[in-house]
Image 1 (cartoon, rainbow, N blue to C red):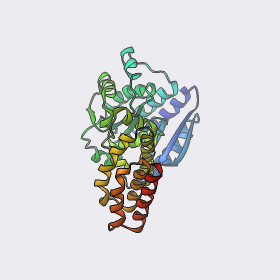
Image 2 (cartoon, helix red, strand yellow; image 1 turned 90 degrees about the vertical axis):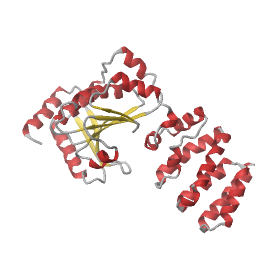
Image 3 (cartoon, helix red, strand yellow; image 1 turned 60 degrees about the horizontal axis):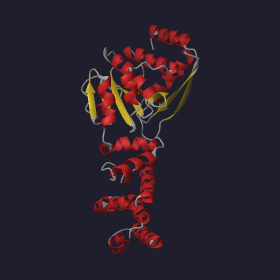
Image 4 (cartoon, one colour; image 1 turned 180 degrees about the horizontal axis):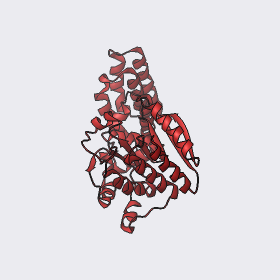
Amino acid sequence: MQQKEEKKFIQFGKSLEKNLKINIYMGDDGLKVEFKAFGEKLASLVPKIDVTIKKSDDDQPSAIQIHERIRFHAIPVGTEIDIFLDALKQVASGVVKLPDSVLEKLRSVDVPARCKLFIAQYCPHCPVVVQQIIPLVIECGYMHISIIDGTLFPKETETFRIMSAPTLLLDDDFRWTGSVPVHELVDAMNDRDPSQLGASSLEGIIKDGNASLVAEMMLKSRSIFQSFYELLMHEKWPVRLGAMVVMEEVIEKDKTLAAGTINPLLEKFPEMDDQVKGDILYLIGESGNYSNISELEKIISGEYSVMVKEAAGEAIESINCRA
């Protein structure tokens, strides 16, 4: 960090009226040293900022969390310093200045909105977009934002096919490049069909401790979201566990809806590894649907591992018990 950049942080610290808490998350992306060094430097330049450095959640990339729903996947340099400090200022003040029409629509949002904003060092337009978005996140409890330096995280840039900055993604489906009309963004958050949410959006909702919200949305729509199946069959156990918690609530409240989940899972059953098979069989048992017993018996007599056959047997016992 250059001397003139350090002065910006020192000056910002003098303007702070209360202490701020920031978390630095170190991911397995080769940037943990840089993020840790930035956190330590920030703490030394701005004593009113309490910096906690910890390992990143799961496989999440390194980040600076300045608010429970705002993360910077960036090490501020160039114009990004002004972006970062302006965001800190807004979080510290908690004062949101938005038109009444926007505030009214924000308060109507009832489906979590996960946004990714890709920025670039020395981008002249990025600060304006960040200034527009941060107040929305502060005001709307359902909105999350990840601000990503595309140069620093080329993997994410490639994954989401980012060609220029700023680019804003909403649930990985809606996209704005350049300027972001605030009214248009808020309208999109309100008009979304929850059943069209992507697997990453549903996973994020569950990770935030809102598994019941996913169950509630599916129960309300009387359908199991297509992308939800990806979570039930996910290779990582924590992701499957979260999805299973959702399914247990759906089973408890609507067994008919839950029963409709089984056939699509059984169709992909041979492709799953044994751990996933075991979890799916557990859910079949929990569903208590007697019509599934014939399929379970086929698994027991089929060419499956002992572990899978035992899980199928336990599922039959569970169904008979519930019947």
